[in-house]
Length: 270
Image (cartoon, rainbow, N blue to C red; front, top):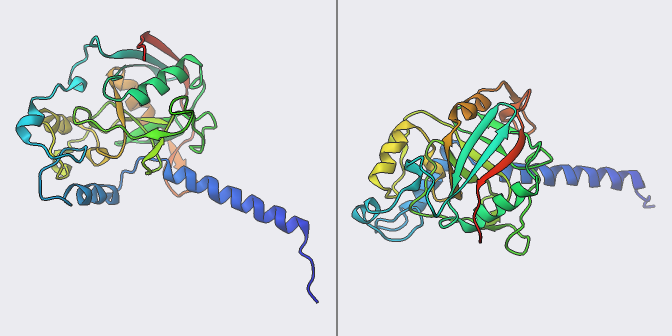
């Protein structure tokens, strides 16, 4: 005779399912810093025999070297916005690129004005890689979009923007339309010029990678800003004592720093 399963069993299975789904979302929503990421980037860039930029389009070194590279200057241009991320560790000034990453910048500025980021912790920090925040749950499982009909939006890739040291980029799940509120600042200060993939990049960007950054992220994450002052604060946050999280990664700060507010210094109308 078949016995009916206890309702408690169904509840238990439901809890397990929720935990597993949450963990999968957390793992998917992270920029990767291992060798696999570099290999995947290299494989993508070498599928075509024609030289391409990080946007996958055919180009030439000469054409790339003629591009304006706004990350390489601390001056805030007429077509750029500026914010100050105020944190418990100090302040970080960043200029934003609304012309090159309009969805990312609009979403970020709108949420900043709504105090969405206030009290968000830097819940994931990896020294010599990056610091990540932008989720009020501080677990890496939450995010918000106020653009694209309030849905996650596409990764915006530009041959003018790269994950050099100090780059402000959006986290995503690896899917085409999965960017939203979570962001990270690239902190690595080691020479990465030997780890450039086969994507063509402007010569000045290749030189910038000698001062740090993470080139294996190029082409996979939206770069939408650049730190213009306060990299010492970024370094301080990245140097925090960490413990191993549920995914086995040593990236959870024991005493996490948090965003206390974001001041919009120079706004942008969309």
